[in-house]
Amino acid sequence: MTPLRNNLDQAKAQYRKVRYRGNLADDVLGTSLPIANAPKRGWRDLLALAAALAIGMGAMFLWMSSRSVSTSTLPVVAIADPATRPADTTHIQTQAQTTTQTPTVVVEAKDATPFTAVPTLETFASANTTTGSAGDFSLSVPSHPILFSLASLVEAEAENQLNPSTNGMDPGASETQEPL
Amino acid sequence: MQTVDDITLKHARSGRRDAKARVLETMQDHWFRFCLMQLRDSHRAEDATQETAMRVLQSLDRFDGRSSFKTWSFGIALNVCRELRRKQLRHGAADFDDVGEPIDSNAADDAGVQMDAIEQNAALRNVLASLPARQREVVTLRYLEEMSVQDTANAMGCAEGTVKATLFAALRAIREKLTGGKADVER
Image (cartoon, rainbow over all chains, first blue to last red):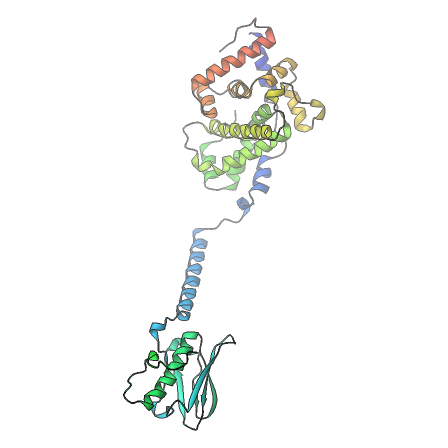
């Protein structure tokens, strides 16, 4: 055996005596990879999680859909009983109060002519039905497009009473009314 | 050498903690010895061993079985050691390849004592310390880990011819320092 081979064999023997201090599995799996210690989740857990997420997303979608009404779907509020509409614009005036979280249209009747304003879509069923004849009445509606629609309708209806030649309840038909 | 069987590897791949622990328990001494030989510092060798273990576990899915698990994992350990050496050089610390001197055994802790055990052969200690990093890698894998030339080439990511040439140069350097060039190198 050559001296070189002899030295290498000695080095190999010493090399094999070296041991890692401690336990590598504890060092690595115990601290550096805490996720390895987490309870294992089966496919049922994943399925339940996915279903819960889908339901949550669906509910959020429906809620957002109910909130985002485009103006093209208007009018959504109408005077329920034409017979009880106010005679002309001098009998009512409307104004929007948007300072509160729930925008409110205040319908003020200036005489004793009774009227009723109701929301016509179920999605706005939360809006209060307003019936009255004199005094101030509030119709709470959930968004500005509804406010505008209500105000337009109320005044448009009043103008229809004054000008029978004007048909329909187009909110844009009244050019002179003040925007809310 | 004790090796990791295919069933344990399969279970480790599937995420079983006990199988992962068994892989690490089987390989920890091998990786540590190798890293200690390359880095010549027990603390850095421990860090390198743990980094190797984490990378092996994270890469188990990519082990395709073309080489043995030992060869594949030593390739990872080799890369970890090279990265640590480069990082040390970037931070201005002297590398052993530059210094060419053995570690200070007076500052030995438990692992340092083990390093001394390797280097009881004082002559070989100085010779191994003075080898360039690439030659030290080849000598460690080929002679101390008893890998074949092909496995050594796979672990180092180079051709077998490169391994043979590097090995020849390393053994010639060792021989010259130990025997003054009188003995032949057994290839």
